[in-house]
Image (cartoon, rainbow, N blue to C red; front, side):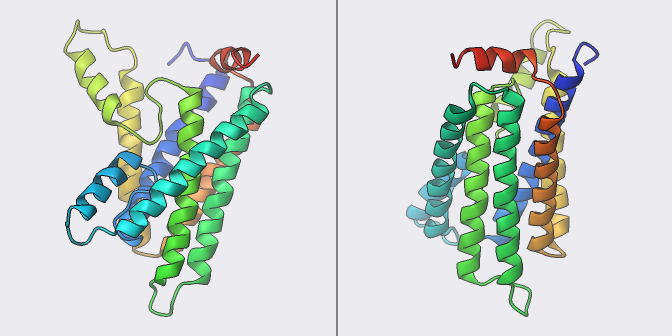
Length: 238
């Protein structure tokens, strides 16, 4: 970690923070939006298969909504990459994370506007919140995939956990990114735990917290330099 530049520290710190946000958002979507995961598309495909297979309590409509808007978010991330790919890549990240923050703020607004007196959002509002968060997380998934920082995908930990265990089975000390991998696991776990605590107050609070953290990550990209990794990524666009 000591060999990292200041710009790399800010970038990696932002990705850790967004991993935490993933835990928050998926806690909200699973607990309050009808057993879907708006950040983790793997889970939704499996849940959709379960639902079509007849498992009760798993809504087909919301799973399809999440997958559709998640795909749309990935498509928009690709378009944004095409538009800004030749600019400094930290500014591209700022724009991508900024759009995600706006979508989360919009989801928070829907949750706040359509909250009933009993404290539960009506069904139509839940579909709107689900669509907005899935769109934002789809943009994140596409953006971070393009960025391709090893072990910092921010939404999927399957390969991260497998790599952590696999490398430890080899020669001792042959696991140079173990801190990054463990950090990713802890951040998503913490986000999910804190997300459940926030939901005890309201979905609005959870979505607002997620939006603010994402907006801070977007701002952090503006005030740092482009990393060597990002410079190579930009060069590949030429």
